Length: 527
Image 1: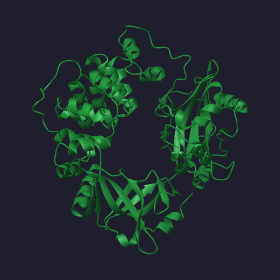
Image 2: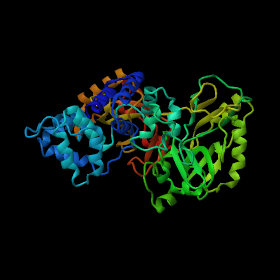
Image 3: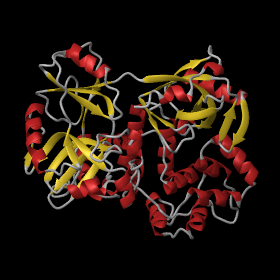
Image 4: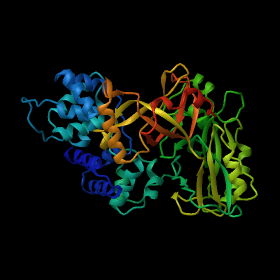
């Protein structure tokens, strides 16, 4: 466990991507089996212990230390696991270490997998009594499934690939045919066996991605244009007997959208945008806010599927039967996709239409006039481009529509996570009603520089008027210019509004809070 906790500490405090990759690679080469396989599962988000709840951990520490001290410390530290790890009292009746394998990473995971919810607090306490602060922190992060060490699943897989001189795309190809602790993966990496064969299983293929368009124009004789829809990009993988849906990160989301998986019975791999239909039966795509009602759910009710009916707007056909089409030009794959549409149910699948424009200037005019709830911008795809994993220069471009902006007033601030746990970096902001009330309209935690973050943190500390656990209410005096992609009606918020991708564009020290925008003004921007 000591090596794993050292890895987590290193990942948290290392800023550079290459530095993080080096830490992961070293661990993967040097750690024993099956510890390193379980570590890889943890770093990629593939561990889930249903018996351990954050509320139980809070009760454990309150029973062992002054509850007021705990609450004050958690407010300062900003992270439950770190606070408990530091405050946990030393048990003089327990030896400092045990050497029976129970506190190895694999030993801890075996214990967490086998413990009931009722027995989990005692099991955790027994292990924590034998660990130092770093070990306790790693244990609690493992148990609650919230590592938050500044890496993505893709970065963890890249670190593994670099450790053994593999191509990360090859690792992605076999990943979903394997399960923790990935014995077959390490056997392949170290030359004890051949590459695991995922054929016959509905496994994930890495997505082709786009670069932001920075050129002034492109030649539409070379590039096709289609709308960039504002849902989530998914991959549909069918073997003829089984279908899986994968997110862009490679997460299996089939359980969240069972009606899509059930509607696809083909032997093919397709790329598309998952959307929800509007309120009118058979209507067009609704806003992303409607889709959010379905995201992140491991199971859904019939009512939810009826209220928020999902469908997929298809972009590309990667594989049809035994034919791998990815090396073909986009134009050929598009023709094959158009023909393939005939065998799909129209209530669950449709085709992303191409945008007809005489030239780039005409396309720019069309893009500028589009403010549909489900349109995020324009995609430009080179007509002769193969389907290749990752971002390849000059093949696909994304040309997002210009963001909307509003001047809002900071209302609340909360501590961040990881390297931001010492800063108030998550800001809730609001706009005025006609009656002079300030209502929250969004929350943002990006868009500012490190220097601006330090300034904002000082503002929060010096202007706090109330505290609610880790949240501080501040004087309603600071105006933030907030950029956002779109805004939608929302029944979940008092203001009746929800912003899509809000971020801090500018700190308006020059503007009085009384001159910030109104809720009524924002409602006129609803698409």
